[in-house]
Image (cartoon, rainbow over the protein chains, first blue to last red):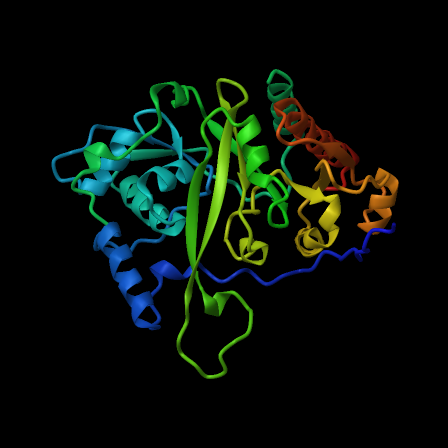
Amino acid sequence: MTPPRRRRRRPQHLPAPPPPPPARPEGGSDSELRNLERLYTIAGPGDGGRAELDLVTLIVARSAPPPSASPEEAAVLRLCTAPLSVAELSAYLNLPFSAMTVLITELITAELVQARAPIVRQALPDRSLLEAVMHGLQRL
Amino acid sequence: MDFNGSDTIPGPRTEDHLPHTAQAAVKIVIVGGFGVGKTTMVGSVSEIRPLTTEETMTQAGIGIDDNYGSDSKTATTVAMDFGRISLTEKLVLYLFGTPGQERFWFLWNGLFEGALGAVVLVDARRLEVSFDVMGRLEERGVPFVVAVNSFPDAPRYPLEELRTALDLAPEIPIVDCDVRRRASSKDVLMTLMRFLHSLALSGALT
């Protein structure tokens, strides 16, 4: 029996992907608008640029929730008393990733949380990092 | 969404807290067709119960059948399962897998950017379901290894025959695995890491 066959593809120089839609209102269906409204409610009135947050950027609270914190901000601050990735926060708070980044950006701006190791979008991981990962996995 | 009850938002269990020394995290993405065992693999090596995060995308950004002139865009939710491995006191590894709809992953900004690399999980009974995702990784220049998940009734092709069928470049590792087993999943991850390391040494990634 012969397996089905595939043909290899070549690297392409793709245009930069479009920005994630939820935080950028451009009209659309009712359901989309409702969604946007909800996101802005969560994010608060500020419309600052989003920090370069990766799924695995670690977030740590810098202080206890101040009285002025919204309930969802307070929830984030309570969750990150120990470092937590943006992905984990998104999962625990049941918020889409892009909504989570908006919320965290607000908290960074307010100096209520710290983002550790802001992701450097370098093309290649450096060798010492790869070796550290290998050593860690070997001990697993 | 009601956050007034945020005191009751489930957070990590005490034993799932990362140490305060955790400084940086890296990620590996596990891809493959529906039902090839991506979530199983995440679960077998993760130190936490796998979690799910999701992202909402509108159809306009998805590039499938457009609705000529129609303004109606439908929102699509893409879910990602992920797990975590604390590698050292300072370094954390996250593994992302996903149920189905692989064409959407590539529109998730930041999922592959910054990832160390990818594992393509393959089911020898349905090789072709992995073809598209492999092509997309190649187009994006994301380094990957291929892991053939063993299913009891799967045809046993020699790995070299699979290499030919998958049109893999000679340097790309292909290994057998049983992702239900932690040790086997770990071996797959080590295979990827050794491959990435060899690429870094040879300067292929520069």
